[in-house]
Length: 593
Image 1: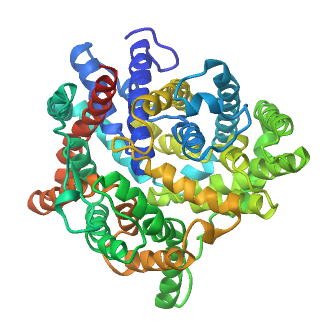
Image 2: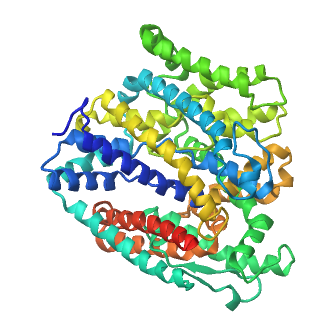
Image 3: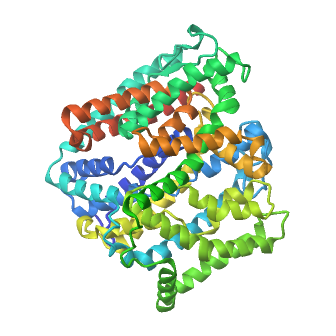
């Protein structure tokens, strides 16, 4: 085996870096444009198995696991960096020079390397603070978390079984390989005529429809694959919501004068979005999850007459005592923790994102985030992901955004950068979940941490480059880059910055959307996330993603749900990965040539 280093090999490091950057880019693109991301664990294992076991003369369980863990590790800043550029370009928002490139370079769409240096330094230091703080929390709580029988991390458990499956045979590698080839060839042929001015990737149906209706179709295979991969309830709810929004609600609102439609579907989409869609959809996304939890609690309380106890599970006070005891016993961890915390305080004093408030206020707030808020958030999110495999975005709003808002702060920087001053919340899930199944992966805690670092460093660097490339050549808020996440973030942060909810959204439809979404999720098969995304996504994507969902519905019933786990997910993932990459590359090339 090639040059080993603590369970690592040179070839596993090279492949891990390549795959981490690749998967991070795909999820960055999907996250910016559709507010979603996918795990590529099966793809990583298949590629590593094909290269190492079949072509490289053999491999070990540990080597495959290292590639899996490293390639799934990302510290990309697509959303943070991209959203700042989006705000400067679209709204002319001013940021301090340590946080953003020069406004002149953004408005004129060129890269000013000199003005990029301060933001890159800040993002680098902030990412180190987040990673180190998160790793210390992970190390401190790893044993008590993995000893909890309810902490199963379902997604990691599935991937652990995949490693066994690949070591028993390589059929999955061939499935992914052929699927990836199909995705590349079809997408390449679709975009090839674009060099001569012909578009075979989308069709605009809006001019053919009655006044106010909006519809366009994208034929890119990746959107069909996305619809197939996500839950059937989500994809079909998304299609239903989109059809109602663009073919029923839109013409009614247009006839009443709420917005002025256009034959350009993107122009009509943007007008409808801010005239109507943004309010109920944000209500669903921001309020729906919290209301759903309350409804479920009330429903469960009534049905059982009592609430199930925690069965002796350690509470927050006990866990905090465990953390303090851990630091006192481990001098090295204590020194690193104090140094990291001190660095966060120094950066808070020097930069003061809460300006014009005095810097000591933000230092106090950083102390709260690092020592209390970050602890609560990390434990809560670790338990949520460990038991259900899901996350929750409301925690950050409650723990950080609302306290900042209560100080009377009405600007963007503090809201956007707070997570750079506290322990990273996803690091426990990204490390302890693998440690839970260390025997199946044949890795040690040291192997896991090294693998995470191998993925973190290149994904951080590459994300800055890719954001600039996507922005310059594709733009934000275009058919290829609808930037749905940025639109949502803009609406949310505008409420905080303006201090006036009604100036950004309609409170009635916002509240109504949250209540309706929670009730639909609780009492029907309809997905509230799908409903929200159907209203937020441009019309180009709702039909293809819905068709993908219909295919998933058919295969689940025709071949059983095991078909998706064993074959369907592999096919769709391979197609999606190469189709997205080919689409982006071909679009950039058509811009250049």
